[in-house]
Length: 137
Length: 137
Length: 137
Image (cartoon, rainbow over all chains, first blue to last red; front, top):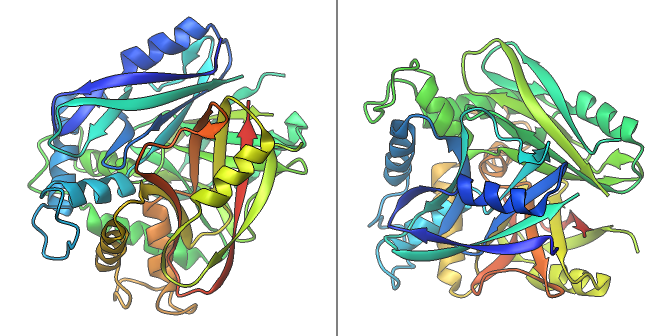
């Protein structure tokens, strides 16, 4: 089976969208006992994050904190033609991760007890984002 | 030999804890001439960093700068039930890296002359943190 | 052929230097249909970024925004012996990425339509930087 596959992830707007279940299912289908799962997001205004999935207030505070650090309407921006949320989204993506690598142990992702995998959408975007998944031995 | 192993890393509190020696030793034991070493931290309030290990003032300034950017007691936080250092720790982890990948050349990590590998503890935590190490060909 | 190789990247000063063409060429030469390309920068004051390569104003705004967040001459810095751009460069490198992993599909990097690979030089440095490239199956 091919070690690379695409996940089309639906997003309902700005913020953290958990994708742990679909990544875990893809890894389980490959039936690899030990290895490495690498996720890559093929966009420049969204990113991949591994963070706490227990208390939703963590995700909300992360989003609000980053919005305050990188606000819309900053006079510094010259790239404004694609809307007020575009340049903040590029900066937020640059400060976070385009790829994440997670070891596989016993056929499962070696996530910590409270870790979930998130697609962090930085634009006011509804639709799908493409995450490419590679699994190596 | 299994390509995945766990390192239990002792931390004595907030800040940068160098783990270069234990990662290098684990890679050396595997006896792989060329490949890729990926490190993954199974926690959401600590991260992995590759930075200068020559002058300790760099590590001190990094810690102080990030503390100022993400202070405790910010009125923005709603996630406060786990202590004043918890939400800042999640934000700091989100801004830095959960995984690091380092090529192996000639049986050794291809670190630059001044590069060291650090576990960056963001909580006032004494104990151990789990880093998972994957080595691929 | 060895899965690890070095790219010497010329930089003409601070800012984003696109290296997509040389990385793509190296991957093409290896002739691997599906796999994973990992890039690693062997320096602590420069980083690797995947960002929009369509409109140059994005790259300019990214550079100016990060310069404002991490200015030279901050009274917080105690590591000042290597020049005013040194400690900001370490902080900028810590906030961005030392490595990037990009899947290979159909013999090519699975970059999104607008994605380019950049070496982000954080020092007023003219010369070369070493990027190590690993390709796995």
